[in-house]
Length: 177
Image (cartoon, rainbow, N blue to C red; front, side, top):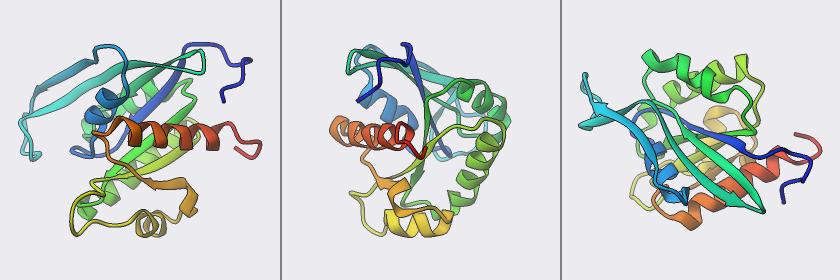
């Protein structure tokens, strides 16, 4: 439950490396058409299009409007990570469980953001429905985080995305957060 003392709209940021599922996550949660700033990739990133500013969607939760912002994943857009996280209620850092080669980059994104903006965060491990993926417990160990701060998520499943959002909000709004 979101306290009434928080003013709407609330901002949640979804970040992570390229291909982690950020755009899909925002699309799964948003109750309005998503504004996406995608452009053809100018470098070999494993997909044709990439986010170059942010993805934006909205969600109504417990009478509050939640603004969802998905960040670009490349370092050259790191200024957007900081801009979007300013004033955020929380951060969901997504990492692909199939791409352990991207974990260091994900850790760098997380450290970049949290060293500048003190924002509560959760790590969501995507692609849990695939074979040969890292489990949330293994990713928690890699990131040296408590296991409750790392959860599995299917970015294309609205219920799974909502579960991650609920977990983030429970961490964000807990008395020790």
